[in-house]
Image (tube, rainbow, N blue to C red; front, side, top):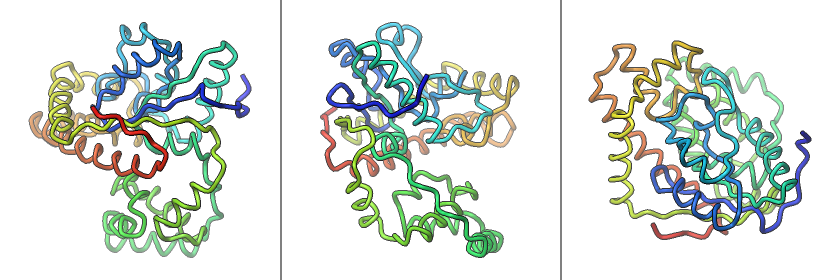
Length: 296
């Protein structure tokens, strides 16, 4: 099917919010009311077999509304934002061909940003600059360079793991090549561009105490429902790639399976990282100046 960009109007809506804010349940209700298909915007739900940790809609929930963009690749695969955008464009066209409305549901801000604004052109590689960054990492470690990135571009640093050397270096290369080093001017530059897929965006806004309680309950349920067994099965069947292995819940499960931490440590660390994720998501969502915030 062609991946050419469809023309969108009010038949496309985005529903997002921090992890554990209730997107799945509300999304199904909205989809049923609008006669819409749901297109997932979750960077972990694209992986086959990673169901519990991603809080992927259950088969029962998927039966209540047609879902797309779930279970696209094996956990060992590298799946980029451009891969997702191509899959999303195809799903959008499929929905429009069938006269269906489109409801994006998910909490991966990078996917939503790419959906609305497109992908930035990749600047040419400056080998001297890359070598200097590589030397800095060799001397001080990736976390030091990640902290520097956080001071310069907190919006980008929030999407990159402190140990992800490759993406940290690429982020600095993009900043250096673009000549834009201030978050505010960068956002203005992006927001001034014509949107690729213009969709109104709704953000679920849960009070922090309630959201933290929901995160606590979700993580407890994840481990009770077998995320450790799910992770071990995926690791044995095809392996879990670097990207999937960084997801909250799976990283800790892998550490437990390898004997590096206890089960209780895995639960505690997953709760902590999930709360941190929710905080980063909220920061990202505030950059959508036209978002409509829904009280949870």
